[in-house]
Image 1: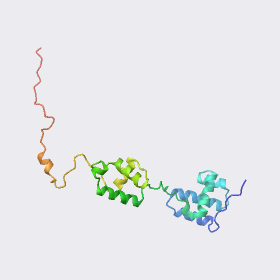
Image 2: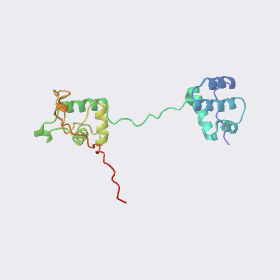
Image 3: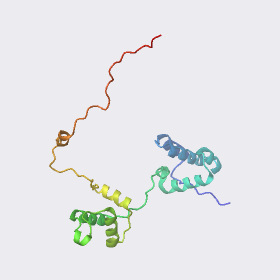
Image 4: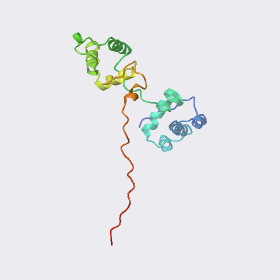
Length: 183
Protein backbone atom coordinates (compact mmCIF):
# COMPACT_ATOMS: atom_id res chain seq x y z
CA UNK A 1 0.00 0.00 0.00
CA UNK A 2 1.32 3.46 -0.93
CA UNK A 3 2.12 6.05 1.69
CA UNK A 4 -0.57 8.73 2.16
CA UNK A 5 -0.01 12.20 0.75
CA UNK A 6 1.44 14.46 3.42
CA UNK A 7 -0.46 17.58 4.48
CA UNK A 8 1.06 21.06 4.25
CA UNK A 9 3.50 21.85 7.02
CA UNK A 10 2.41 25.50 7.44
CA UNK A 11 -0.86 24.48 9.16
CA UNK A 12 -1.60 22.51 12.32
CA UNK A 13 -4.71 21.02 13.96
CA UNK A 14 -5.53 24.13 16.06
CA UNK A 15 -5.22 26.52 13.13
CA UNK A 16 -7.36 24.32 10.84
CA UNK A 17 -10.04 23.99 13.55
CA UNK A 18 -10.03 27.78 13.97
CA UNK A 19 -10.52 28.15 10.21
CA UNK A 20 -13.41 25.67 10.37
CA UNK A 21 -15.01 27.65 13.20
CA UNK A 22 -14.89 30.89 11.16
CA UNK A 23 -16.08 29.32 7.92
CA UNK A 24 -19.56 30.18 6.65
CA UNK A 25 -19.63 27.22 4.24
CA UNK A 26 -20.85 23.99 5.89
CA UNK A 27 -19.12 21.71 3.37
CA UNK A 28 -15.80 23.53 3.83
CA UNK A 29 -16.17 23.25 7.61
CA UNK A 30 -16.72 19.49 7.40
CA UNK A 31 -13.66 19.10 5.17
CA UNK A 32 -11.49 21.25 7.41
CA UNK A 33 -12.52 19.25 10.50
CA UNK A 34 -11.60 16.01 8.74
CA UNK A 35 -8.18 17.44 7.87
CA UNK A 36 -7.78 18.76 11.43
CA UNK A 37 -8.27 15.18 12.65
CA UNK A 38 -5.39 14.09 10.39
CA UNK A 39 -3.21 16.91 11.74
CA UNK A 40 -4.10 15.78 15.28
CA UNK A 41 -2.80 12.28 14.51
CA UNK A 42 -5.92 10.42 13.42
CA UNK A 43 -5.73 7.94 10.57
CA UNK A 44 -7.15 8.70 7.14
CA UNK A 45 -9.92 6.18 7.83
CA UNK A 46 -10.90 8.05 11.00
CA UNK A 47 -10.82 11.34 9.06
CA UNK A 48 -13.13 9.78 6.46
CA UNK A 49 -15.57 8.89 9.26
CA UNK A 50 -15.37 12.48 10.60
CA UNK A 51 -16.05 13.85 7.10
CA UNK A 52 -18.68 11.21 6.31
CA UNK A 53 -16.94 10.21 3.06
CA UNK A 54 -14.63 7.57 1.61
CA UNK A 55 -10.85 7.44 1.73
CA UNK A 56 -10.57 8.54 -1.90
CA UNK A 57 -12.47 11.74 -1.18
CA UNK A 58 -10.26 12.47 1.85
CA UNK A 59 -7.27 12.06 -0.47
CA UNK A 60 -8.86 14.53 -2.92
CA UNK A 61 -9.39 17.01 -0.08
CA UNK A 62 -5.73 16.69 0.94
CA UNK A 63 -4.61 17.37 -2.64
CA UNK A 64 -6.89 20.43 -2.90
CA UNK A 65 -5.82 21.70 0.53
CA UNK A 66 -2.15 21.31 -0.33
CA UNK A 67 -2.59 23.15 -3.62
CA UNK A 68 -4.92 26.04 -2.63
CA UNK A 69 -5.10 26.04 1.16
CA UNK A 70 -8.49 26.32 2.91
CA UNK A 71 -10.03 28.07 -0.09
CA UNK A 72 -9.43 24.94 -2.16
CA UNK A 73 -12.06 23.13 -0.06
CA UNK A 74 -14.91 25.45 -1.08
CA UNK A 75 -17.30 24.10 -3.72
CA UNK A 76 -17.15 26.16 -6.87
CA UNK A 77 -19.60 26.35 -9.74
CA UNK A 78 -18.57 24.45 -12.84
CA UNK A 79 -17.33 26.77 -15.60
CA UNK A 80 -19.76 25.36 -18.16
CA UNK A 81 -19.20 24.99 -21.87
CA UNK A 82 -17.30 27.65 -23.78
CA UNK A 83 -19.61 29.86 -25.84
CA UNK A 84 -19.68 29.20 -29.58
CA UNK A 85 -20.07 32.86 -30.49
CA UNK A 86 -17.18 35.21 -29.79
CA UNK A 87 -17.46 39.00 -29.69
CA UNK A 88 -16.41 39.31 -33.34
CA UNK A 89 -19.24 36.93 -34.31
CA UNK A 90 -21.77 38.89 -32.27
CA UNK A 91 -20.61 42.20 -33.77
CA UNK A 92 -20.89 40.84 -37.33
CA UNK A 93 -24.30 39.37 -36.53
CA UNK A 94 -25.57 42.68 -35.12
CA UNK A 95 -24.27 44.49 -38.20
CA UNK A 96 -26.03 41.97 -40.46
CA UNK A 97 -29.33 42.34 -38.57
CA UNK A 98 -29.18 46.14 -38.55
CA UNK A 99 -28.49 46.25 -42.30
CA UNK A 100 -31.46 43.97 -42.95
CA UNK A 101 -31.92 41.61 -45.88
CA UNK A 102 -32.02 42.67 -49.51
CA UNK A 103 -34.87 40.63 -50.96
CA UNK A 104 -33.33 40.39 -54.44
CA UNK A 105 -30.04 39.03 -53.06
CA UNK A 106 -31.03 37.15 -49.92
CA UNK A 107 -34.45 35.95 -51.06
CA UNK A 108 -36.20 37.00 -47.84
CA UNK A 109 -37.87 40.20 -46.66
CA UNK A 110 -36.92 39.75 -43.02
CA UNK A 111 -34.30 37.67 -41.26
CA UNK A 112 -35.46 34.37 -39.86
CA UNK A 113 -33.45 32.47 -37.28
CA UNK A 114 -32.63 29.75 -39.80
CA UNK A 115 -31.34 32.38 -42.26
CA UNK A 116 -29.03 33.84 -39.62
CA UNK A 117 -27.81 30.36 -38.63
CA UNK A 118 -27.03 29.62 -42.28
CA UNK A 119 -25.22 32.92 -42.73
CA UNK A 120 -23.17 32.32 -39.58
CA UNK A 121 -22.11 28.93 -40.91
CA UNK A 122 -21.18 30.28 -44.34
CA UNK A 123 -19.30 33.25 -42.95
CA UNK A 124 -17.51 31.84 -39.87
CA UNK A 125 -18.10 28.06 -39.97
CA UNK A 126 -19.87 28.29 -36.60
CA UNK A 127 -22.86 25.99 -36.25
CA UNK A 128 -25.77 27.12 -34.06
CA UNK A 129 -29.25 25.69 -33.68
CA UNK A 130 -32.31 27.92 -34.05
CA UNK A 131 -32.95 27.86 -30.32
CA UNK A 132 -29.34 28.82 -29.55
CA UNK A 133 -29.52 31.62 -32.11
CA UNK A 134 -32.74 32.85 -30.50
CA UNK A 135 -31.09 32.82 -27.07
CA UNK A 136 -28.05 34.72 -28.39
CA UNK A 137 -30.20 37.34 -30.11
CA UNK A 138 -32.26 37.88 -26.95
CA UNK A 139 -29.04 38.33 -24.98
CA UNK A 140 -27.93 40.92 -27.55
CA UNK A 141 -31.19 42.85 -27.03
CA UNK A 142 -33.10 41.74 -30.15
CA UNK A 143 -36.69 40.50 -30.01
CA UNK A 144 -38.80 38.57 -32.47
CA UNK A 145 -41.22 40.56 -34.58
CA UNK A 146 -44.87 40.05 -33.76
CA UNK A 147 -47.45 39.28 -36.43
CA UNK A 148 -49.12 42.66 -35.89
CA UNK A 149 -46.53 45.10 -34.67
CA UNK A 150 -47.67 48.25 -32.95
CA UNK A 151 -47.19 51.46 -34.89
CA UNK A 152 -44.50 53.68 -33.37
CA UNK A 153 -46.83 56.72 -33.29
CA UNK A 154 -49.87 54.95 -31.87
CA UNK A 155 -51.38 56.72 -28.88
CA UNK A 156 -51.60 54.72 -25.67
CA UNK A 157 -55.40 54.85 -25.35
CA UNK A 158 -56.27 54.66 -29.06
CA UNK A 159 -57.02 50.95 -29.11
CA UNK A 160 -59.33 51.08 -26.09
CA UNK A 161 -61.41 53.85 -27.71
CA UNK A 162 -62.36 51.60 -30.62
CA UNK A 163 -63.12 48.45 -28.66
CA UNK A 164 -66.78 47.55 -28.34
CA UNK A 165 -68.27 47.47 -24.89
CA UNK A 166 -70.12 44.19 -24.58
CA UNK A 167 -72.62 43.61 -21.78
CA UNK A 168 -71.55 41.15 -19.14
CA UNK A 169 -71.90 37.53 -20.15
CA UNK A 170 -74.27 36.77 -17.28
CA UNK A 171 -77.25 38.56 -15.79
CA UNK A 172 -79.17 37.94 -12.66
CA UNK A 173 -82.41 36.06 -13.37
CA UNK A 174 -85.67 37.74 -12.37
CA UNK A 175 -87.13 36.43 -9.16
CA UNK A 176 -89.94 33.94 -9.74
CA UNK A 177 -92.50 32.87 -7.30
CA UNK A 178 -92.66 29.25 -6.41
CA UNK A 179 -95.93 27.72 -7.48
CA UNK A 180 -97.40 24.98 -5.36
CA UNK A 181 -99.13 22.02 -6.84
CA UNK A 182 -102.82 21.76 -5.89
CA UNK A 183 -103.43 19.10 -3.34
